[in-house]
Length: 79
Image (cartoon, rainbow, N blue to C red; front, side, top):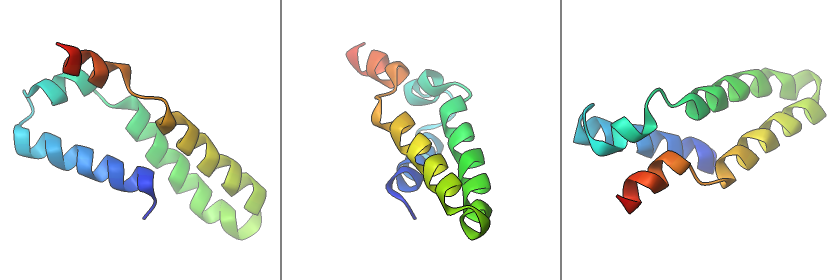
């Protein structure tokens, strides 16, 4: 599993442990970035078999999206 996949899994586990009404869950909302990442992974995996450059580009898009810190979480941490 990639690092972004692990991060998403641990983030969802944190939300599950702390509850749907926790500050973290409220900060993330619908988690559009996470859902888009999963969709890109689902496209990139089969693309790797027929168009490796396309798959690599999709993986890079996901990595670059997650390098940028999530403003909602930072705002929650600052209070």
